[in-house]
Amino acid sequence: MDNTPTTGTTTTTAPGLLADKVAFITGAGRGIGAAAARLFAREGARVLLAARTEEQLKAVAEEIRAAGGTADHVVCDLAEAASVRAAVDRAVALYGRLDIAFNNGATITPPGPVDQVPEADFDHLYAVNLKGPWLAMAAEIAAIRATAGTGAIVNNSSIGSLRGNPELPAYGAMKRAVNSLTESAAVTYGPEGIRVNAIAPGGTVTEMIRTWETHAPDLLERITAHSPLRRMADPEEIAEAAAWLLSDRASYVTGTVLRVDGGALA
Image (cartoon, rainbow, N blue to C red; front, side):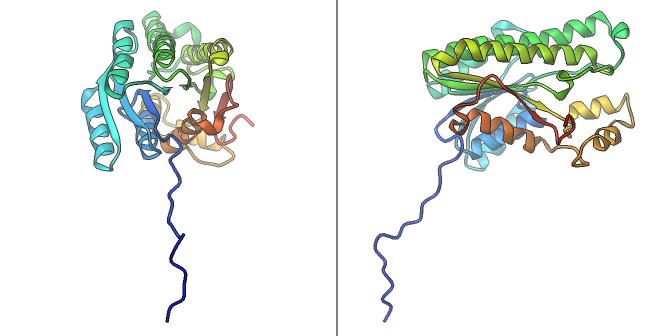
């Protein structure tokens, strides 16, 4: 006879890191943004993916839904204010509110010293990598205020913003300005319960790095050599840091630029 008690024994599953959150992600069609979209959905968030290339967005959103998550997509040009506002408004229209946002979208131009950066490249980097996050933050803060009331934002910066960046000086400058915007927003909106942080990834295996590598064939070897871990990061590893900062487990963290660089700047 089996006398093992059967009452009071239940199996529980811990809620996801971002359970019940509505998340907006830019640059979500590939690389770190796509990894973040998949991760956030697995962790319980309803996600809206934004970027310029609809085919990529659609593929990632369909993958998330096939895995049981909740996702949709919207085409968005970070350099256009109306496009950014419309994308954020779409998240609220779809899911009823906005809780968290990951401003990941960015672009890159060919490397070169300061005096050889074409003005058009500088202007393009400004429009996408600095003005874009500023536009997104303004729209996201308005949406969080009007719906969830409190929330969190993470901006994707770079370790190239934390030191001299002779190969990508304009890129580094825009990312350093994003750090400043992050800190200013954290101070401004903290009293309202809106946290704002940034992450500064090191070398990560993305299409952007591959583009840079076409101009510098030894790039991956140099990045790996300067990492104490002796490897590049996977996009998923960067996404994990963003997810934590956006979660309630980071409730007392705001105004920081978190290095996720394998110790490269140690």
